[in-house]
Image (cartoon, rainbow, N blue to C red; front, side, top):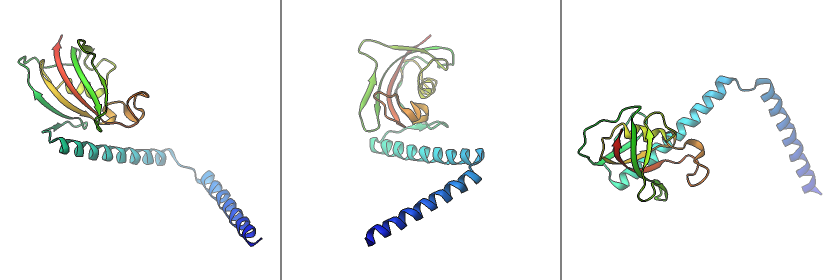
Length: 176
């Protein structure tokens, strides 16, 4: 009997407390600025966590990477003989293999095939446009794309999980 009374009192107090919280929230509510600030802070936390994971990956692999202002990490480990610089609007012909930071291979160009796309105008990851602009034909590079330069918060709903950084081994075969 005593347990039931205590349980009833706890539930009653919790209910009153919740009603009070709901009234305060309804009265006060969050302004658009407060919501924006909270989302911005959450995004900052995601970015910091991504940076830390990518830095640990690079340290483990001992890759001499460079970084861009967007957070792309890259290493051109094989240089081609062509000196033509990629520019927006050119068509890039590439081969690639893509994996997650844990080493899981997710996609690659099928054997004997290539992928063509128009730089800065095609529907490929933002980070791919960015790395290709740093390459010349014949170059091979390792590129680590943080989630915001890859598939973002949602992944691709197939092989790439939510909020995933991607590691590319990419070869720029030609520019047109």
